[in-house]
Image (cartoon, rainbow, N blue to C red; front, side):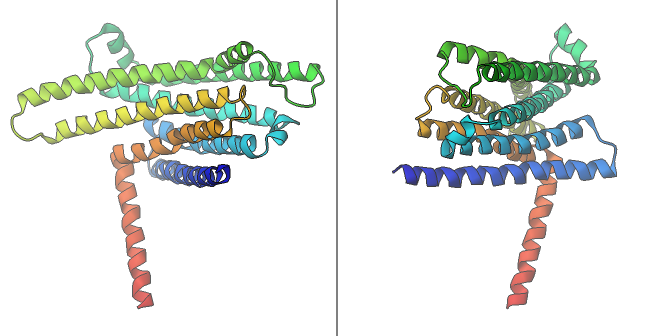
Length: 307
């Protein structure tokens, strides 16, 4: 039974990897081509960085998961856990930062509130990105220092094998401290998304009260934007649930099924949101339709040659 579950798990994980690389690679490629033709915009920079960081992140998630599930002895000994820990901080922090920056950018550009603080931030949208970069650098440096301290503590004890037999409370406190920056980005991104959904919902209600009969194009655009945001929030929450499951698996090492579930749940967000972005962004959607048309034309030419 376990062999069958492992086979399904490998198929699902490889599919997530392929979708993640294709989806995020497409977003990065389209924005790089657009950058070569025109000046790189703020949204183009964020989307490109988000795509690259997510490709890196999904590779780390899957590599780390495979090692923990199929070769836990290799994972627990040597310097491998150090490299994975540092790579995880880079991938996770940068991905969360770009996702949060994207949420804030759309929130300040699209949302409509009469609050003084919101209007003050809206007039200084260009200052938000540099502030976020500074916060990312500080958070990453603190995380690197924290990881280095944890690893050095174990080296000072002359442990040849990674010791996971610490108190659960101590372990979870260390994990919370290690992920404070990520928790901040997650909270900030959720808050901005919720407020943006509220703003779009209020605006949509006003438009519906003013327009009789069928919905106009603006109303449809607002409904579509709300669906995209709600999908993003759901995937974002699933990502953190998966992370929490993977972290808790360190205290219950023998539970392979739980680790598999946590890993597949975590990997849904990096590839799933890329396709949501493609469908929700007009430039990316048009580019994807052009690619599909080209592929259909190539297939027709091959069929004609065969016949």
